[in-house]
Length: 174
Image (tube, rainbow, N blue to C red; front, side, top):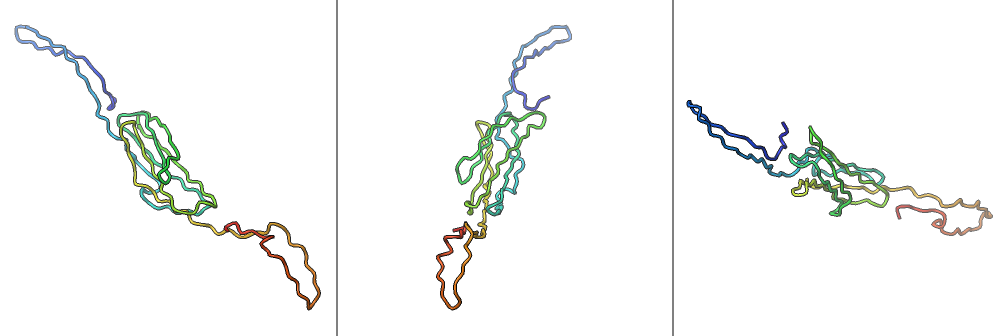
């Protein structure tokens, strides 16, 4: 039997005595479910933790969830309070369990702290977790030459004044 069943059934109650007198009563039985909030079962990394990555790395956040009554759920991921991903998921028998993930993609311009949060809603009620605090550490990149320096020649004992090397080299972190 499906524990999520709700609906209407009809039954007849009959009473009789030793003289075979019978009386019957038709009864309508209605089972309505009480909606409860979805439940987030697992989270990775650990809930409310502070994963740390460097700028060139990625970090994946994942949750699994279930709901005792609803089969269609909406999962909303937020980065610093702004919605970044919305997914609609269906729960299927017998486990009624599903999952969702968001990957923060690093690049060399996003060092800093980020708040990542997720909520799972059945349209009426929601489940949320404490936010993760993602720390993205700066990476010092090596400077490089934009162009090749020309060979230089000058007489011994004389002075040569060279133009600024900044015309030839770049530091990507500046």
